[in-house]
Image (tube, rainbow, N blue to C red; front, top):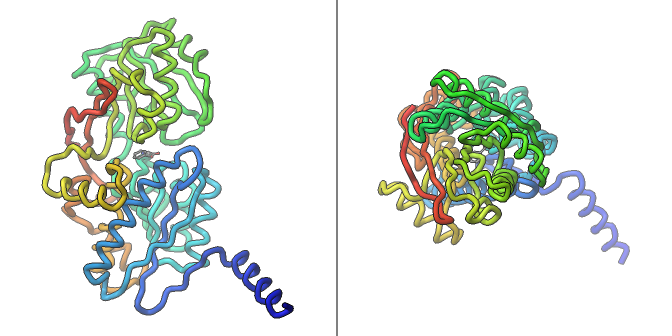
Length: 377
Ligand code: PHE
């Protein structure tokens, strides 16, 4: 009995101090992932995680990297920037990971990047689009486009394709991505002769947007741009329709989630958003990725699943070219990534450690998302 107690105590002590830590053995390479597996943007993290799992499974089935098995060590950020910082600290100091993949949300990548940089551990964000993320230092990379481009794509689509001139903006003022994207949209839209007739703010977690929408309505906008994430975006569109505001509503990649249509339903008809990827892409590479993904996880991959998959592939490729897991070598190899053909497009890392890539525009109609067009940078 006494023995059992000691053992139990030891076990609890170990779990409390180590978490689910994982030591690398000589046949393995440990890679950290910090993702929002729970919280307000849980679909972002789950999708990324599934994309990563598929990439790790495939690479290991093919013999691993440098003859070693690639091991993914995952930490949940709970959709909070402070937890993102804690998560990467654990991955780096407790698990000694050789590189880190994450996060989707820019605010969380911005909180974690300085820690990766200070420890000289390469970080690859799959999906954070705010320009500031990779400015945190020369160990910070991303495999997606950035918001000055995304904002321009939304603005050009509104001005040139929809031929609308009077726009209103609704942004999440607690979200770096949302604030940035709104600003980049405004920049191009006004350059193209458009006018921002009103702007309103909200914060993640809000559920009633009627006051802001009513204020926007009084300025008679022809379109509304909502630069936040899917939960609030879906509620905003729904409440706008209830207020008889039936103009086109536009968003960015933050709208991408199965939850968007689940929450917003038919109210989303007549909305558009930009994204990194569409499962409707008919290229052989994307078709095979979608089929493999579905057979592993049943659901269709969204942009974050595809970007997670590409982030892992880019990192594997860099470690192979580096020839060992020396952090500076992996960093240099990542920086020289050129013309890598991923499921989200051709990836070349530029001098600012960003990827120059095309964007897709999606339209929602009849309660379904449709692919409209691809815009080159
Ligand atoms: N680009 C968003 C951000 O930086 C995150 C995101 C990427 C959301 C892709 C959905 C799809 O915060």
